Length: 637
Image (cartoon, rainbow, N blue to C red; front, side):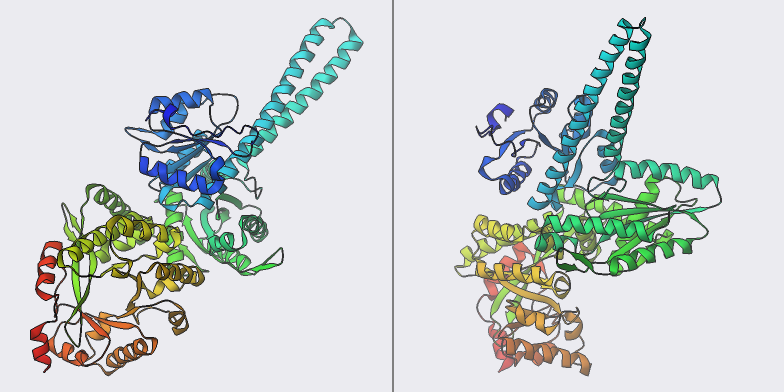
């Protein structure tokens, strides 16, 4: 649509606090999602425009028609980076914020050099994060504009002084006074330009070097280290539970925490080290003049210890921690790009291993990260080309054989490598954020098919869908579930959401709040693979749980291993006391079935009942088995 038809302006010019925003995005779905967040931020007084046309976007940039530009990085066959580079001009600073579907460090760096204020991944954007980015970008642009005007005024005064100097060149006394004015003006101009340079290179909140200055200093220090016999290390770190601080105590407290973190980092590092804030709660340290790699570990441990102590901020005691990823400059890691990639990979492994540790990048990790990068690209293509499909595995009541529902299981049919097991791609999808669009597709596909089966057979059929921990952190879970149920027509009581125990380890309060909201919506909640995680019974008791699924590892050995049998019996007893259904996974033999059949309120899932099957085969199976199995009933008599 033309920009002129989509501009939505409030005729309230007196409200200067509401920025005039232009969204440049060729995907209407993404535009509407961004507009919803902007409406949440600015309310009905939002002044917003949208265009999906390159030429209209370029004209708007040249005309300086808007205060803020939210630009999709990929615009058809061209990029948002090309757009701002082609239209950038001297004068009033523009506020450009990139919105992209994929996190790419190289693109992030290029966007920063091109003048972008921020670089946000669409799957990771929330209204709070978008508001913070816009607020920060406008603040920086305003300060730059003030300095630009001040510099312009000083330069104008300089020109006046120079003209007066020429007019009074023959008058020595006047010339002397004029020269003094000129020197003063030049000094002020130099000071203003220095302030402008500092603004462009310093983080406004903490005063530390920002990403731009950090990149320049890293290049310089690498060159210096390569000429000397000293080692150099790059350390990456971010804060644990920082999002929780912002959500519970507010962004002002979060800002004060970042300031104190920066102060502690400066105190615990050496004078030869460089500490920088890369954005959000991400920090980097360039450690130079190292005698050996162990020196880098010592620096990292000082950082970990310094941030482990509680922070006292406006009456709040805040406990946080950090892990550190370390990359060493060597023959295999000898430039900025590789050093950044390796430090980031090491940080990822450090956080995966637990909090409060440091992790060095090594060659094995390099191979792992290369594999990770390839798989990430293939997953992106698989989503675009719809290479995923669902299989369904039935669940039945042990005592009667009555069908109680099906579980939807995602499968990936790779065009070259054939079928890839979920265990080989789900972890990568979770770590890259691709699990969000994949899970939303799984949910919609499973609900659509189950609603069709319910209508076909004239009875409610339930479907179980797995949830990822990432979906809880994204903050869109309730909206996604509600929208999917409305679109597919599936009754909420027919949808079971399966979570693992590990989801409850971190952010317990937030997870509990979301699960209670989902339960109030009418959907059912099940704990998957129970007994393999680390949740306490206190957590389980507080959650609105409808089902507990015993992990197949216990069921498979319960007839031969007394300890596994004890675990299964304990979970069944727990389910009975909590008033919830227990589902035994991995039932594959008649003996296992006989062992469990006499237990009330227990469902069975496994190859003995049916293997996971395509939707068409499952439809036939349901038609044959929706009534209690006569064969199973006879076997039990």
